[in-house]
Image (cartoon, rainbow over all chains, first blue to last red; front, side, top):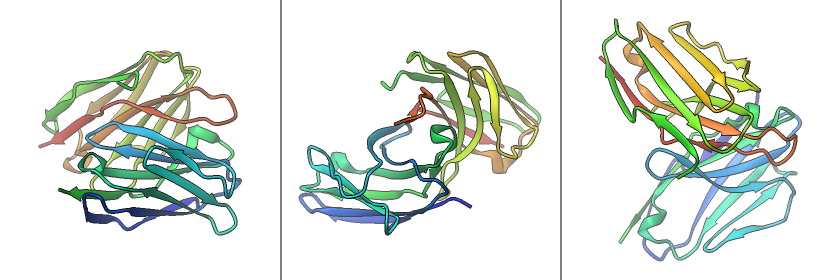
Length: 112
Length: 114
């Protein structure tokens, strides 16, 4: 059975800190790994990773995939209070977006 | 604004009520989804419609009944729900291309069953 495990489940840091969120997975016929940010209700897309070792970057956020060890990390540098959210990791197999498997999410709180 | 609109945003219903959740996507996508998000649990896929045909039904109780009249609209009809059905119900859409597919989510309906 396909599975995604995120850690930690909850994290509280001070503004300006750097955080690393983890996502490990087991999936048959891996196609892609996706990160989403859920601030209030609607999860919004951050990154899609398909190849090992290639870092995706957007401002202070970056992510990388290791297909050999079956995990991904999401880094946020110089955190701001607006980064407070639930970060969701999901993986797709051969059925693509029709069968994304999500992790429980990491609830990140940034204190001023 | 993600291009996926859900109504209502909040819904409180009794166990004997019948209500419907509505979702509309303005992205020209060919697939639509219903997900359930409960506290401390991963998002659970409920239904998938691809080209207006239901292609996934993840052992969802019959008290949840989806309807997809066209590629832009999706409904979830609710009847005789249980308190454990209280959750955030998220609609999503995607373009099924065979590569680099991702979901676009609506803001959800927060459902409370009394």
